[in-house]
Picture 1 (cartoon, one colour):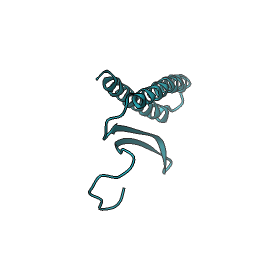
Picture 2 (cartoon, one colour):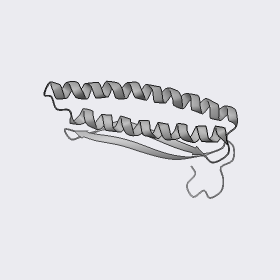
Picture 3 (cartoon, rainbow, N blue to C red):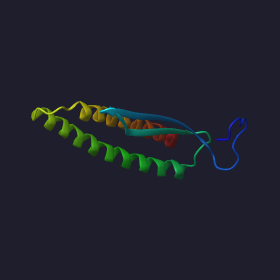
Length: 115
């Protein structure tokens, strides 16, 4: 975005972005854990674009479910073996937060397709 710009951007439709960034500190080093950006179109999307975005979101949700299942399994294993699991639990919470955002996006897309 141009600094000090006040009017609409010419060209492609623009979107409003909202994001979540999860960071964690390990031994004084800050590491990026996950990033999630959600969007809402500033202009009306056509039906095919909505359907394409819905398909992408469904894939992301399916992949997210696999990641969450793997992370839950890791947490259980760490706890069972008596190893520290705080970081694994923190990452699991982040993955669940990202998944909730994906589900919200799917809900919005389905609403737009029905409307």
